Length: 439
Ligand code: NAP
Image 1: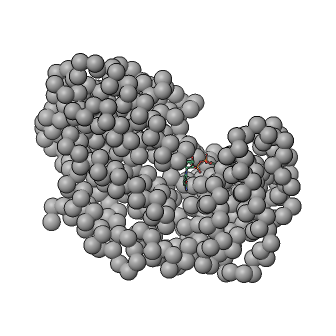
Image 2: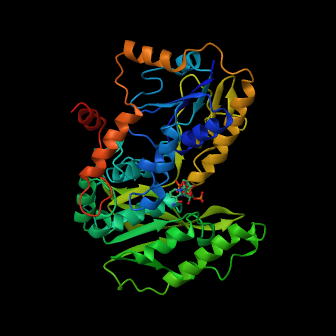
Image 3: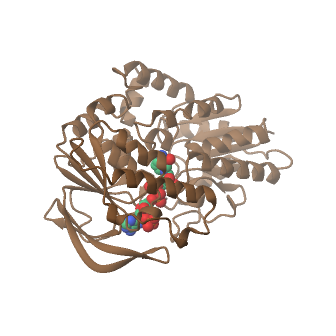
């Protein structure tokens, strides 16, 4: 019997695992289980809509999905339609590749006000993720604050400030483009609780800001150190070069006055949010000035306020516990040894190691787990029913699954419906997708 493997989640981590498995055991039967009708996880719902080149990696994943022993079951949710226990009974191996879809919550007073949004929700909204179709971030504002100095904070700030022409070339859904384009927003303040050399955003993303049509980057020269300082002496040369490049770009930005273009992205460092101000909706943000001691941000006790109508917290993501699997509450991951969770159960990607790294960081996760699965089943599969058993169960439960061929039909419609320079017009609800398939 060929080995049967369920990969739960069809983002990069899931696809790199399938790809490695197809090389390690070409006869294996691989079934992707995906909560949404559409595949590709963060490639579709996380990578910024104005970064279409990055999204092209989905073409590679498509080739894996179309391989002979690979099948796709979209619109099937773990522990709603089929429990983890049931997957373990149906398949020889189960790989959890469900990512970290939730926001690390900002817990300062006032975080529940209208106008405070987490980046998972905000990014999901501008990427047309069905979970966030109806988010109302309240963009009738002139000033926004973005908390965090990672690439997600940079994405959020950039998309908020994109011109209508820039948005038209992306696959931002129409209702989102309309809201952003109609917003009177002029200033976005991006706050890092540490300094410019500790910022986690990468240099390509930082340099992209000065090329925005309507936005000029602003940096206060007095916040920039002369060099990286002794604390970075131990970094490998690649990491040091990245930080040096960031410093160089920020120095260049410090020369702008703010008058060059109608909108501004202000890079602000050494400031940690302490309170959201206002009544029912956000009217401002109180921050505490910080200094960096031994690499950590330490409050100085001195605070200042920014008047703003929107606060996006881009402070990281989190995985939820999965019923039937162990959970490390402190780290927000499934405890595992290099991807092995328990007999027949494996984890890859952000649910395995937390929300860090770039798309290709998931490749080694997949390679390692594929190797484990190959080694753990030296005699091939047992007598588990695999795909036939899953389909039987889904039919009994009246679950309407979406095959990869169905997804290809949806994708063809999205490409056909694209207007002007946009690459596609996304379906933004599950209902729309199912209705389109049902004619
Ligand atoms: P990230 O890189 O870990 O950045 C999180 C930021 O939030 C950091 O600046 C962190 O500051 C700050 N932060 C955390 N808790 C905070 C708090 N309580 N108060 C204030 N600030 C706080 O995470 P991310 O931006 O969500 O990105 C996730 C991963 O996806 C990263 O590996 C990222 O590189 C990747 N990604 C890549 C791209 C790209 O390549 N273009 C695009 C998007 C995402 P400290 O550093 O002080 O902790």
